Length: 398
Image 1: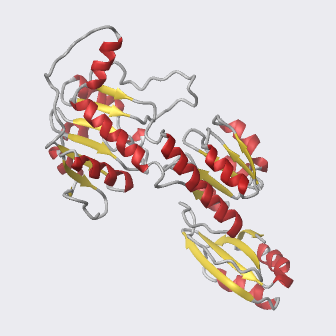
Image 2: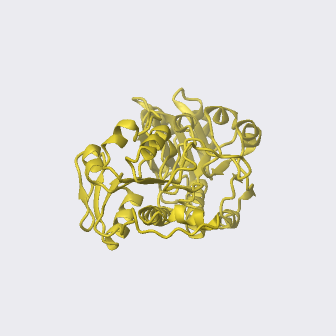
Image 3: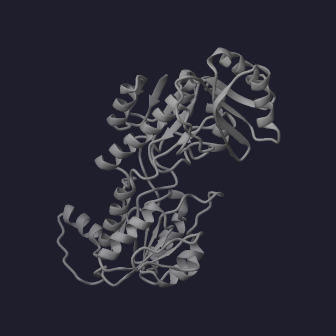
């Protein structure tokens, strides 16, 4: 098993995978499309962070690819439908950077309320300007959280401890924590909140969630914080709203287009604005978060490679089966059509194979099966299932 880890994935992941017996190549840089097309051809498992994009063309070119791991929360850098259709599960780390992102969000909120970013810049320029005008405590202010998932909930917990009143909007009913309160619409949240913090995925269309219309509905003097996805905000409209004085400021950690390396120039259209904090996608950039993410994704790789388990995959059926040392394990990905299981079981029956364990799950247009069969006929079972018209990928794990 050859594993390629890009973008400086934490060393704990490298060690965990090497200790499991795999050959690991770790590259600190991201790869552009053409370079990745060449590297991915003989790779069994690919690990990336946020900069490397894995397209449909990469899945076509990958001759041995079994799995992809995104060492972070987001998976929008991978074309998931293409991965699924090629029988490749994609894993991520939904919990590893939760606390780090939440702490940065709270730090940005306090810095905006005190105009600390502007004060810092002036001090570095040798200018002393001490003033209380337009600076506030965050206690007793209203924080509006858009998206009450793992990170949104952590932000709410910390904010309440600081004395803020917390409201949130989510597309699904969520259990309020502490004294948080769910509101019925984004408009209601925008109207009430002194701080609005975004914690949702990019919209399916790629269009901004917060544009000129939404910014206009926010309270005059309110602040906008985004540590989630860069495409959620219309940056031109945000600039106009801040320059007009409608918003009191903004803190941005993610951008629609981000440099591939630290050496590339950067401009998002918001530089130079008063009380606008810009950070270079630092949300999950802590030693603790990267360690946890490395452990989390590496562990899913080991379970998948050694057992075929896909628990934690974002684009695949969630399947796991206890180990049986007296069997050979066959992994099968097939088209999710009526009669698929019957066809597979007919093969097994015709060969007189004994099924010692079997688990099937479906997701959208594919089915994934882990099956433990008698050792004597396992190769024949694999060959005949591979020949079925429903087959996408079949292999013997052990």
